[in-house]
Length: 198
Image 1: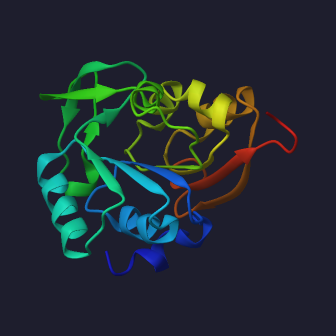
Image 2: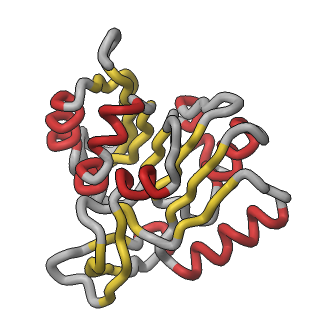
């Protein structure tokens, strides 16, 4: 994790004091911790991490760093709420929803439902790293994107075409993109609402 800044374009993620930052696929908290410091006591970080081992380490890291402005949610983000099939990866960062052949079952939620449940007055950033589930998770966040127009930092796993299509429908443009393999295989995008879109 110490090498993350040289691997991912973390400088694209720039929450400000008072922002609300949703970290989907928080893992052990690298972005969560950074965002919590950036948004400060007037801001809030909501960290979704369904894997219990990752979540335990995330909560431990938050405690060690005395983070008080973060809520950890033990759910996956998806296009519908309820139980979904889950495939643990060989590495903790590779766990993912696999609706066809996942050998385990976990609970998922729509971002829109969580935003309504928390009665959030704004959402400024959504970061997403969920191993190929990014399109389905975004489908569960359409109302949030339409109402609050947050910046989106998404790790892409062979989903670039679908993401472009969905983002365009929602009035978003990809303003930064970086790939470490052939285009669409694996990389990162930063998307923001079109200038002047509501």
